[in-house]
Length: 439
Image 1 (spheres, rainbow, N blue to C red):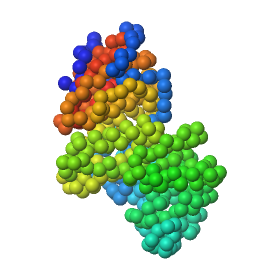
Image 2: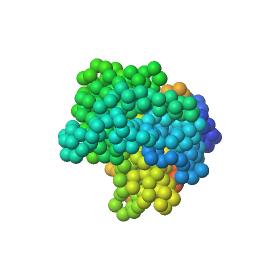
Image 3: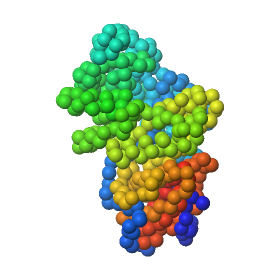
Image 4: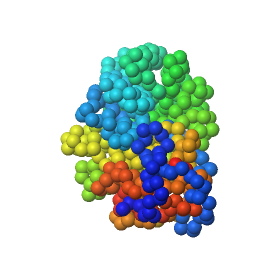
């Protein structure tokens, strides 16, 4: 069993996830007998009163994919009852809208990133000029030379998408502007990108009610200088609603309190967390734990509002959720679901304290509308681990576990009783388990 402590009266009745259709059941109405008590020295304390960042969602990129690989894919990706419940979709400028249209129908928020500015997002195009040794690049790269026309073109794309049932939430200034043209990307220096955002992209998106995102750099190392350039440019800073980066190398993204202070959001928008040793081709639980650990660190250390995986589809699982070669959904999809299905848009992370067992990570989230609680516990050990939680606040009377492990994909376990705000659970070896309940 993934959890110990016994079934409370009423078992798994009620809504543990707190969101309509979330599939998170297990909370019982509180009669006042489930709270109180005192935290023990071995407890992980969930401090519901200490609200942290708002969660906007979790998502994936469909770049270069024209349509779903299988008719059932929307359920696996977007469903909050049978799938992972992802709530964000990143599409590529120039791609078709079939995937996005189905995502919108499932309530998913869709946004767009340009790579190339040519026909259907190809390299170059009339708005760029190939330049040698530009922006520190050693090869010839496309550099934006007709910014107003590109702004007009992107605005037309947004309008067209809207007419086809895809209202875009945001448009990014560029995919990895610091990558020296990788995968058709247009090259920008930090100053050039800030000018592009403040002088052209921002004004083009404002009348359409579409948010602007930037800089979507390759990693934390590149993010700092581009973030500083945007922040230092008054027009760019005013126009940018979402600061974002990828995470290829250089570790966890830096904490940037100025983003939240300015009422802006901070997103991770692309990463491949790799293949664990002995897990070929990378669709097993060991590789999924790398994904879950990265998500935990980004949410608890960088205080990110949103998190995305790269890629929706690939062959031989080179960084994707579905392997088109083996036709298998990677375990990382379900590990993401331990967050995305039970931590819905608008929820907030709450602070935790105490020392977890070695190899165990714990984070917690609350729905401000009804105080529904989700606790995400990651056990990277090859043996099971016992963990005790103390809920400081409006404790639910029971918590229902949903486990992703070698043998389970968000498998629902028996509800455990919370008494005097405390409960002890057993985390299966190499697992991600979300405990959900509503007071």
